[in-house]
Image (cartoon, rainbow, N blue to C red; front, side):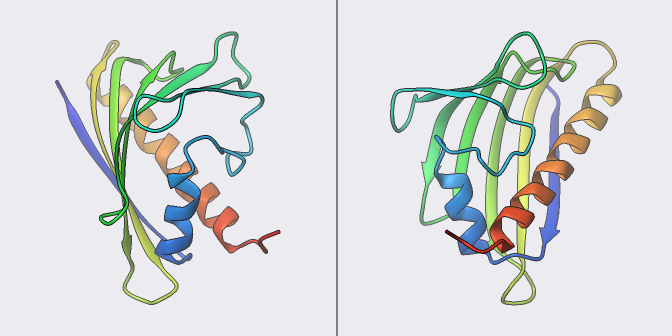
Length: 141
């Protein structure tokens, strides 16, 4: 089972990034997300994110540690070239007070070449880090 770690430093405070991630039912920070269906609450809850594909991406919450700013989830129906996908994201303070470091640790089973799956995962989490930073630095309602 391959593992990849993707770490990105962003220009937004860790508390605000965590606030966005920790609300698992709200993915309004993902600009390509269409309709989102929520099933359940807390560990085990699922969010089905309808985007441009025929089938939604279904993410199931598996772990939350507020004190350590960690969130774990599995992904089914991913458009990425993977059969199994488990992720743990952490949010840490950056070098400067208004920066943070997002780190995703992903275990996956690739469909086809492992390198292609790793490149796709890296690209997705690079985009997600940017979307989170953009949402975290916008004026809050």
